[in-house]
Image 1 (cartoon, rainbow, N blue to C red):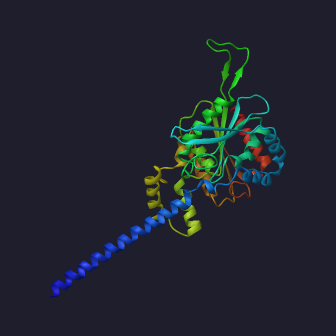
Image 2 (cartoon, one colour):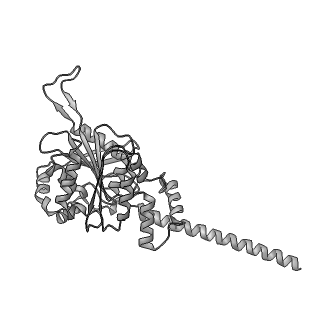
Length: 339
């Protein structure tokens, strides 16, 4: 009788333990599903309009209002759609420089922004520096198709494709020079890729890949060291939770659902592989992408020219707004070395 009671108690104990494991697994799955949707889900109906971002840019950077009104009134801002190698339809806006030039900027927006949300940087390049500019809508943003936010990781392949599109749009054809089987000699663009926040993370991810010769340099403004680091920082800041185990399970769910994981999306490793010049910018009051991420990124770049600009007193993505004259001078000085 005593042995039977012991067996029954063991069975109850095992069942209880299994039940607890099931509850923990279900709880983690539910929490991971919530966190993944909270972080990466961005339905088209929730996306802010182009007009919203144009008005916001005017409010934040009033010195560019005249230029913006002019380029839109004269229909200088044009749309283009392309089908990416992965099969989705992607959108960008672009505008030519005031004078014909091969100098071109590909300007990459941040998390839940869109191309029009980078018109202030377009102003810097187009108005102040005389560049052609192309501003893409990343996957799942603006007018581009897409079912989630890729945090600048898989977006790197799309930005490389956009640099090719920009080259096709803006490359200079010199009249009067005949080449065999050609009526005009084609001169490729000379490009800078400039991103802010998630766009900066995208830019750094691009920098570690093989890019066309006409991509000359990169500017990253307040990008994160890795998707894992950024989400872990936000998990602690917004929810007061440690990275383990929720980051691990959410990363695994992202891998299963979208084909990439937080762990693989290492912008800092891409920077270590990069060889072309890069300018690093960060506001020293940035808490959203912690300012502490700047120096590890800068130190990770050991190949190629580099420079750093710390925007004193600036919070996330506000370095240009707060210091636009200094920002413009530093970008111009850095980029002009590649012209």
